[in-house]
Amino acid sequence: MLEYRIMLTPDDNGTFLVTCPQLPIVATFGDIEEDARRHAVDAIESVLGSMIEDGEDIPVPDGSNGEPIRLPLLTTLKVHLYWALRGSGITRAELARRLGWNRESVDRLFRLDHRSRLEQIEAAFEALGREVDVEVRRAA
Image (cartoon, rainbow, N blue to C red; front, side):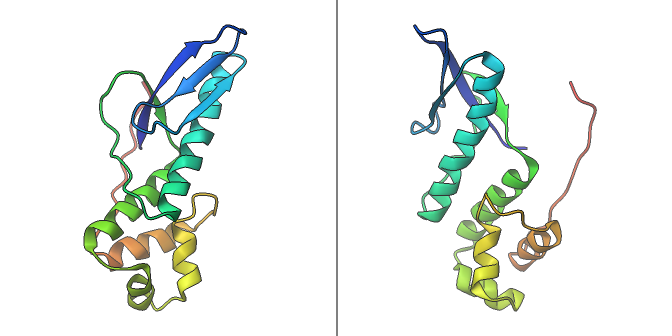
């Protein structure tokens, strides 16, 4: 699972400001810390979705300062698929050709607001010469 780090800063009006050092455009808030963390996930997903749409490089999460915020599994898979596509040097059109799908179906795989089926994501990874491996472990 992808985990970006956030900074929670108490604001002067009793709310908590959220920023993400690796994604400087992320800025949101919450009335309580729990709300701020939940809003952080939404804000990070919005920024990553915009970066994918614009064809920008997405930084790999690092161990920088801050509190880790875990992104949903589907978001994690889609970001990894985006990295795999960019790393392969092929276009989405070429991926569509390899899969035998229309271009719109491939484009939806990269939209974080679209609930793609896991079978489709797995097929796209396979077409890029990658495989998905899942590990389940006890929660901390």
